[in-house]
Amino acid sequence: MNLLRIIFNVMLVFYACAIMYLLLDVQWKNLSRKKKIGSIVYFIALLIFDISAQIVLDYSIYGKLYLLFTQIPVFLLFLMISKFQGIKLIFVLLTTVFFSAPVIVLRSFFQSFSISLVCIALVFNSVLVFLIDRYFKNHLIMYLLMEITECFCFFR
Image 1 (spheres, rainbow, N blue to C red):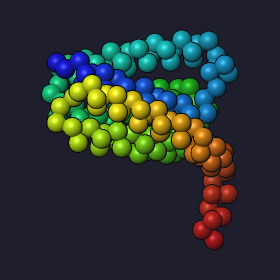
Image 2 (cartoon, rainbow, N blue to C red):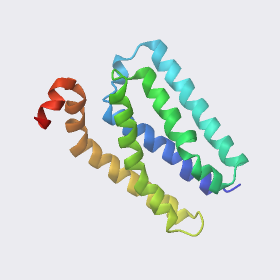
Image 3 (cartoon, rainbow, N blue to C red):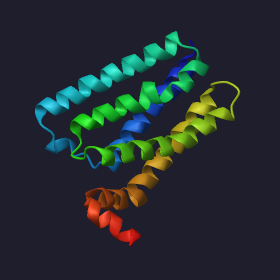
């Protein structure tokens, strides 16, 4: 078991949640008390599940099942608390996977998990979250709020 590997992957869980939180424009203050408590309990269970999977599985197996252990549970969390449903939520999930890919590719340049990898990934994640919040979020939210008929007007 490598502690830095666990820290790196838990950071990816937080990163995925931060991206989906931003892109889905979830307003914590507007959630009911039941949804707040449920999402906190679910998130803690997700972290425990993710850490347990990392301890039990080899990194190569965990890496192949990354979507199953990280992105799909995060998707289910936001399925419960987001105002968006269906294909729009799946689109945001795929966008989140797309924005998570650079960090995973960054990991492939290092032979082993080191403190420098964790620090570089933390800085990289922070910059990407800032860029998403500053430049990408508003356009995506406007797209998600459009009706389906308005989306297809671009293809006429």
